[in-house]
Length: 334
Image (cartoon, one colour):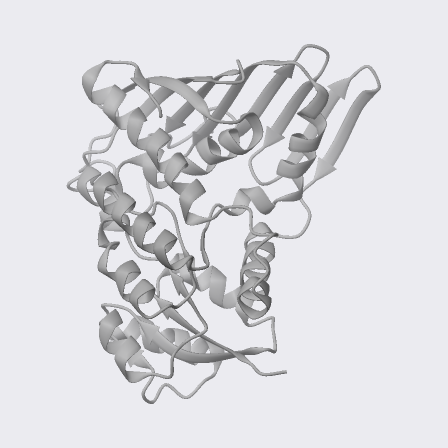
């Protein structure tokens, strides 16, 4: 079997997870590693065990001009660095998997979307939780249920990377991190009608927390009305230092059942038959990556659960949360 030629743009922690999954396959050839810090690109090559000669770059266009054309590229860069990377890949007709959030400017996102659509290019976005067995157990179970209220939460601390703590480079915790739960809600309950979100700062002292320059919201609460009638309240918080806060995950309250999902861990369903307990199966990033690479090889996109066009809708929802926080208004979605 001819090996797929793959490359990586962004050689930090998230693409490191993709490297790990790729290394479990024997049908891949690694042709390029790009990061603004060349030592990070070298670390990837060394980790995989490939000769780095001619494969390390600090500029994505330079990489694409000087390596054998990749069959697929994994893109994982800070949110504010999206744009020309995607356009370069689209111009060269290279399928890619891009991590969320896909950018911070909606006009830019829509221009990228239009370029992808014009070429019908295979592009998927890293909403990994759609591939989790627990998510799909929930989705199947609620198909014939009457769902009223949903509560969800992503609670924790502040990641160590400097760009995360700035609104202008990360978009804040809703956009950069909790977008996974917002996307999961869309996947389960359909499209949102409107959102009203309140957020605040004041608990996190950037110096005392060791995050100088911090200006994202410490916490927020988003109330979403879905077109299906479901009403969800999604909490987001990064100020927690002890005590754990709320359990991260999602609770779904049906007319005759309750689903309790612990984020990427387990699921309990309580109904007239008692309680059913499920543990997470295979790690979702690996499932997602294998489906993406198999789609590149075969051209069959049917198993991909989120293309770029669908990801745009999750971005609109999360960016609407930020708009609602800043304006105090209810934001209606298209």
